[in-house]
Length: 143
Image (cartoon, rainbow, N blue to C red; front, side, top):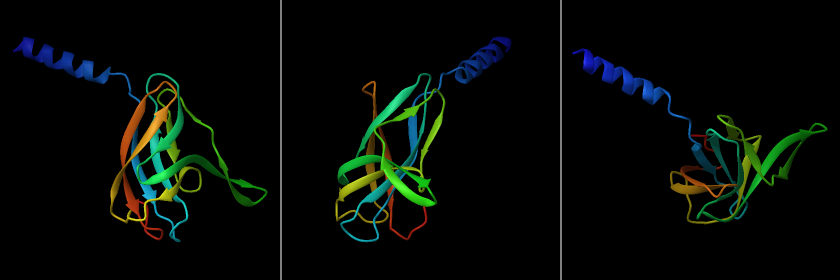
């Protein structure tokens, strides 16, 4: 019986010591209110054991995707493109309404609320992460 308990404890400790892995989740896309205008994609990235840099995002749902950030400047909201986004070890970086986001240009007109579409995040060291994004309408609440 003691050997079984020892093995169980060893397995539990090994699982606790697993280093964190770079991953992304909570992806979703808000369609534009006016057809033909850009959509926006949102998600969360959590860093692994080493610093990395998000360089680009792509999706088959759009012809072009750009990293952007909304910020307040002299009492007015402005949006500016981002060349890249650093992700520290174990850090959580959110892409959310009112902050960092991905502008999607040339959105497929067949894309509709309720659809699920892949979004690929491309990192500096050549690693790509793919997440599934839920599509919501312009006036729908975030998922």
